[in-house]
Length: 458
Image (cartoon, rainbow, N blue to C red; front, top):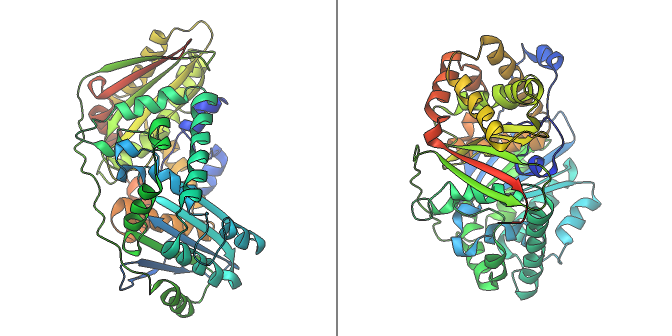
């Protein structure tokens, strides 16, 4: 799980550094003695390579069908940036048995909730349906896995939609263009190409995407052997296994999908990147620290360090930078997203009136030094653990949440079993662990400082 915080409403910061729900001290105290609860599930693999996880829970009348493909933007060539995100739309463009847009309409007509998103690591397609319509959800997922409508018309429409998304992100969200540029610049296109371009793509590369590009990506990345199906909620396991075999069993295995190698570079030396943005009224400063992959041994402590520094009104950014120094009108931070490859830890602030970028940057750097020294206390760690625990519990309330937890563990930890171990591992972090990871990763030579100033675009 990834956490971050916003202390004031700033659309560009909120969208680029998306935060989780904040929890009051009262709620955290109530939940202090509770655990996140074990997830009971079974797993098996079809002959075509599709991995299946079943997590029945008859306490509701809802069932979640969740399919993840290892088809994130890290798998696309840099000159085709945006190809992975194209499938957020293409997967609803119809299939052999369903007209364009029919997937959504059929599910919404029976009261289902749908979601789809693509990031660096995976493409996720999920629906929560009434228990008696599980067969419909499974059939629809299998139909588009086996026969998605990829043609000149569907690709052209998806391409236009993605260009519109890019335009809104870059032109209408303050700080967005500069942050995307900074994140991509953390990685060398030769040593770590999968992360050296933005997930949303670039205008030039999106415009050049072809139907042939989409078909080739689909044939490799959307094959059963590159996917995992999770069913969670109110269903009969034996009957569901039969449906899965009936709908998915005949789909052909695809070619082996290998991702690009990544050799991350840590501590390459302190670097500052200055950009201007005509869409902003106030300067902002971000410090981006390179981190190892999500499953690294330091991951749990880094998770809590993000909460200590940036989550809620009691965080260091909120109390020291925004409230006491009155240097920022908005702050946010923490690990930006879970990755199988190198991650990014950020401390970000929008300057208050009459505050210079230099002084704001110095305040942010001071928070990293505070974390690496003896500033953090057991109270800080306890507050972070309470927030984490509350988030973990709320993240297992619905069948869709359970499915997501199992998928997360399988992709980012190598085994779905880790869904029952991750919370305990984070809650076992000590104050010494917190200081150690700050001393290791939140150091100047490992940071890129981004200064965004109002003015004409660079």
